[in-house]
Amino acid sequence: MFKPVIGLEIHCELKTKSKMFCGCPNNSDETRPNFNVCPVCLGHPGTLPVINQKAVESVLKLGLAINGEISPISRFDRKSYFYSDLPKGYQISQYKQPFVEGGGLKGVKITRIHLEEDTGALSHDKGNHTLVDFNRAGVPLMELVTEPDIKSGEEAVAFAKELQLILRYLDISEANMEKGQMRVEVNISLSQDNEMGTKVEIKNLNSFKAVKEAVDYEIKRQSEVLEAGEKIIHETRGWDDIKRTTVSQRGKEQAHDYRYFPEPDLPPLDLAEFNLRELKDSLPELPEEKRIRLSRNYGLTSAQADILVENSEAADHFEEAAKKLDKKKTAADYQTLFNYLTSDIFGLMAEKKIGIKELKFPPSGTAEVINLIGENKISSRIAKDVLKEMVETGGAPSLIIESKGLRQISDVGEIENVVKKIIAENPKAVEDYKKGKENALQFLIGQAMKKLKGQANPDILRKLFGDCLSK
Ligand code: ADP
Ligand code: ZN
Ligand code: MG
Image (cartoon, rainbow, N blue to C red):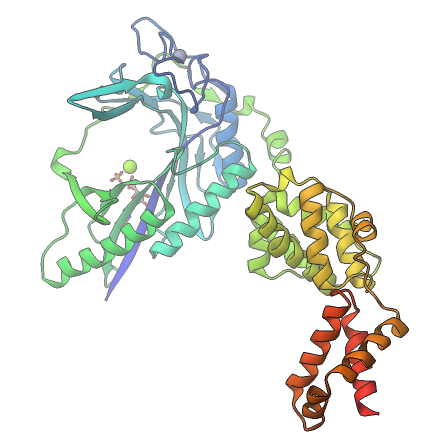
């Protein structure tokens, strides 16, 4: 049996104001090509790089968040190669002394996290020409490398998604894969009888779906090669997004020799200069801590907690509303709140194509609706209408109920009059019910509810039918 062995190399563009080694704006939304450039990021001779402190802090924050070890002294190195998106002929990166070593995430050991600069962007789609845009050249790029601890495509995706969440919680990268702000490379081999196999590296994975499919494809491809008694070629493969297969890009013999050496224009960095204690204390609550707290404090299932962990604004709305719930606050109340928020309110938001920030009512409005349901002042049917109106106008629930006459009718006399009337008008259904047809009762209740414009307290209505029909 072959066992898949997988390690990831993940690059993320950091969300800093300026670039890694110069003062140019770091703005991925800039549409004017070669606008955010200067002699430093264009690689003009005689220019000198200056380290971006925020970028270093961002990497240290991530290092602390994954319980990695921060090296006391760190250093930049030159990684030499020639390419048209790299005017200097080398990239400033880190080789022997990265900022962070060790740590872990989702049961996967982290090898290292280091900092480097992004290259320019080439576009090949203009006839016979290739265009180069240096707006991206010199943007701070973080690279995280994992140990080969991952065993499947699902695990690889789960790891990458959790990292993406952490980067967003730390507010250090937007980590949008479609925009190339987060790029995942997969290293994969099949081991047999605990012997490590030859690994293949897969590049160009620009979605989680592609990561999963590429791993699955590669496991199948490598198994077939090995089962046929052949050898795996140590190579780099690309992901073909149309054919949905991996394709060979270059073999080991064409691998680069980068001739790393210490960057002579930058001093080694003494990381004691950064207040690590303070940085650690400044870390926000992380996704996993939040998952545990939401499950513990509100009795949410792990799937429910996940929905809120992945949407911090919804989580804030939920927690603010939870505080405003009536005294009792049982797990059932939190479930009701969760359900109205994630099905009804989310549904209405989707219809209007708005986000939670654009809601015109505060979390206390949501809480009030739940409280009114709990007090039997409105039915769940009416609650839906009230929420719809709240999303439209931002009005307070009590005012909407008042002005639209939506208050639930719990007046026994008023309901009883209607019940009697419906019984008198539907002798056939009454007869059917007495013969034991439960459907007939449903029909009668439905008729009465219609007459009461859906506002009758359903429990009282049902009880009155029971009473009147058994007479
Ligand atoms: P290279 O020298 O080819 O860059 P590294 O040892 O630096 O290889 O590892 C790069 C990535 O490949 C890491 O994520 C590591 O976990 C992973 N890796 C190393 N060996 C294997 C293997 N046999 N199978 C799968 N992944 C591996
Ligand atoms: Zn610049
Ligand atoms: Mg390597």
